[in-house]
Image 1 (spheres, one colour):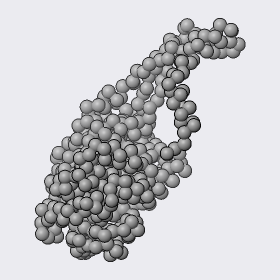
Image 2 (cartoon, one colour; image 1 turned 135 degrees about the horizontal axis):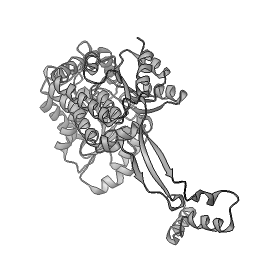
Image 3 (cartoon, one colour; image 1 turned 180 degrees about the horizontal axis):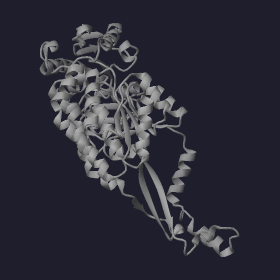
Image 4 (spheres, one colour; image 1 turned 120 degrees about the vertical axis):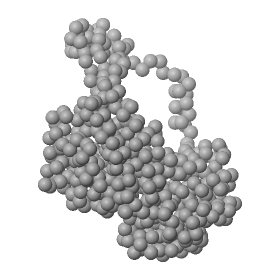
Length: 480
């Protein structure tokens, strides 16, 4: 059976209305939770086989995150499915106004290899909670997890409305040609651009969760030991193969040496004297990916302060710290999707902001400071999909905030209510009584009294004098 045939079969199932009921939605969330509970060890073993993640890291960064998302969605799915009553303007009385959260239809979820469970099953959960039929296309690069998802999902979830399709880029192209109602893609900016073009040509709506060079800035008042511990954890989790990992660190010149030393000490504390034999340190996904990151490191003119050991046959790159890195260094040319951490000394917050502004808008930005004034200065001047203050990564580990990029780092967001919004179409419904027929007030020919009444009703009210004066100020004052 071709991928296009599978997609068309799922579209046909959606057209029957099978997925729209709250009972179906909640049953599929329960089935997904049961799958994770019954096969935790199996899934953790697959993650270890593909990426070298131990069971604790697999749970914290993947399985547990999906569980938390399911818990939130279960609590809010029924209320989301109900029409939302909203106010009706006096000019439209008598009438009722409602917003209906309609499912998108058949959703194609294209998930990546770096967090294949979380980044595949979290959007799947959001899509089914919103009443959609789903085709999940896991990455073919992480072969063990791909096989596990293809095996288990049909055993637990509705095999008619939720399907898994395996294969490479040709399969994705084939399914987009078949015109799903919505595409949710997580991956690189390069592939995301291709997906966006293909969807735009077919007028398919989409969400892109991409990446970028997510920077951190450590100010001179930061708690150095805490910053070092958290940055090491955030950077080297999953061997640096995290879309929101700190790509590089800008650090105030007054504390640059102290922070670098603390980071080196923390690497040894978290992963031991030899990370190659640590059960807590993962591996690169393939030898080819390890080679790509190693080539970036070899091309750098910076100083390897710690690490630098590479064994591509074992998919291994040691946690590596590089200092004396210039803005035009090879390590700054693109996102480092691996365990290489450039540390760049800057004169202060303004210098860091200026350097960040020269790069593409990142998926995340991390600021380490205890100063309210530094936060107030930096945050409005940095464009990023999300921000962590004194902590990396955790802004995405909550269903109460949106996760998504901006510009080249992504389009759209999800998690919690933002998943329900992403996978729903908000439809306006106005139910107007036929008597009295107030619509005749705006039909031609309009009598004089109707002309007067409509002009009185359709008005913005008195224009505030203060705001009008402020508008005059902005018209006459050039930017500083």
